[in-house]
Length: 405
Length: 125
Image (tube, rainbow over all chains, first blue to last red; front, side, top):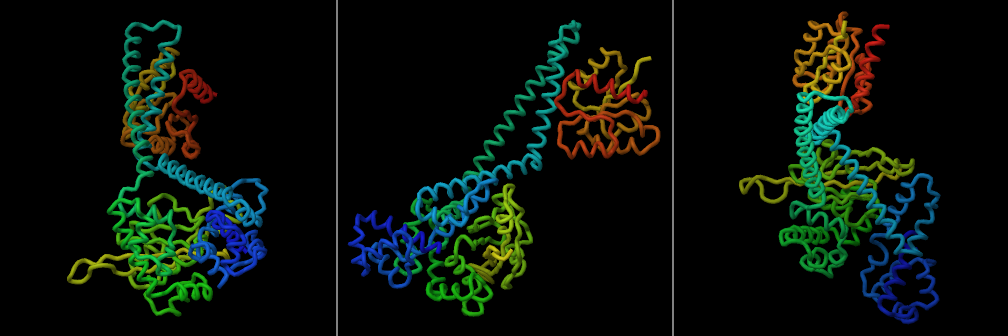
């Protein structure tokens, strides 16, 4: 239902973008204009050959019409509705909203994501205020100095006469405390400013690529259907990245293409249809490496339900594409006993577990329940090993939103 | 006879201001800045009331308060705590340890004076 309603809108948008009339597109796709009209108004499902014919006529991959950001958009809309206490939005009509007003729906979803990001930053700042030793010391210094200044200034301002000796002492104290306060304030300002810059900046090419991949999404349509080389996929998706980040992007796309060779799109989609995003079932049905299974699930499954997280031997994130609702406490923090990290200590063994995140401050009962995720992780050596060098390990985890929680 | 206040605080300018306020109001005031020796100082001076900062070098005000409440001689001594941390948990912790009054920095001179007077008056019954 969700895909049907949004697919029609997408067909209509693409047709108008190309300057085609309904009758023209209908003829190209081999259907009647009235039937196309029903499709465009989200009253008929498109799939199979018809989907292919429409996609071909509109010069886009089939996936661009049938899949993509739809599920994420709907999930964001629902989360947005649930995040407002007392809101009377009808969740069941989110699909209708996205279908009729895709632009406005995207704005609502984007704003909701911004609010969630800001919420994370506020929580991080609260953490910092309560746990950061520099901030604690600096705030204590400021409050202490302000206390002294307030008391001393009051004494100097009182109408009662002070002896010259006391007046001189209090004036000197006021001067020295003002200097201390000024220095503490400047140090605090500098620290906070640097912290905000740290949060907004990708320090490394890996982080730069990871941010771009999050924006792009884990699926590469051109690599799935073989119409693009890894190099072309990089230029299309990551053309603006730094040269170093592009190298990482190229390695990612090359591995993606190898994964597709090992498990083609049709096979992956058949497994998904048969077993859902269940890594164990996929592993039993397909004789490929476990890491390939996890990556293919992440690439083919619904991005609103499945997330992907990989890290190196130090636990440093390589790729973090988290599903909606999975909000890590801090940008670089996580719990050490999550399967991703447990797998680092047990290479070549599947590690499973359930991750339950604390409820968001504004969580409703529904969104609270949805913050439970089934996690499956696998760690294996990558690159040089043995006598050729020290083996590097990479751990990979997929997160599946627990619909039964 | 003037009532005796022991001020345990390590910030010299705050010590100077509070001391001046109390002296002008007719109190006898002594100051001490080291947390490690604060308990023995209280025991040797036997003041009528103590103003105790939380963040002190070598020993925290909470630990000093706990030690003072653990011995009969100072179990009921009026003690007012000063802290730059006004969080509820700090106040609750101080109350659990038996503090008599609690003030959060920054405070006004008038409030300090009023609280000290009330503290000693209450102790005098």
